[in-house]
Image (tube, helix red, strand yellow):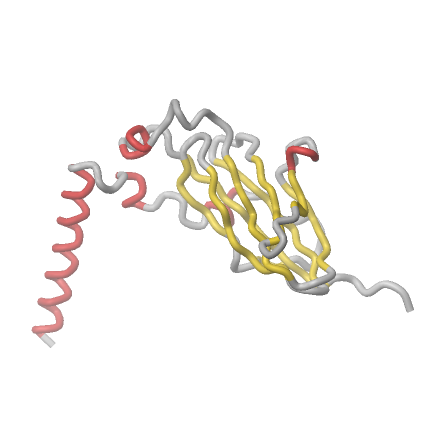
Length: 170
């Protein structure tokens, strides 16, 4: 038992020392080490006003710099409605595009829809999709060096909710 306890303490102190050294020498952003964006999507993104939507585990949050793009892979299942909401820490209007992963067909692009930050869609067939999220801003003016210093990074989130589609017809 003492051996387990001493190994645990050694690992804890060793990892914290390594993290501190990595931060000091610019390998790990200070804000990333403290992980400020954990569950940002749960706290900041708009929930569906309609009843019956449940949190979907494909939702994500992350630390972004201005102009950065990221792709999230998801699966939309047959007979399900989805509510998708995008949010940023500074409430900037993020762009997102949903593409069919197999065909590359653009299923939705919010730039063609007044840059709306949330949508509800119904899915008739199970399909894999790529959701491409791009934060506004000039990536040339804010690069990794600024993000490592912790100055230009911001949290962004993609909240996905789902429910069974209402049956229609007889």
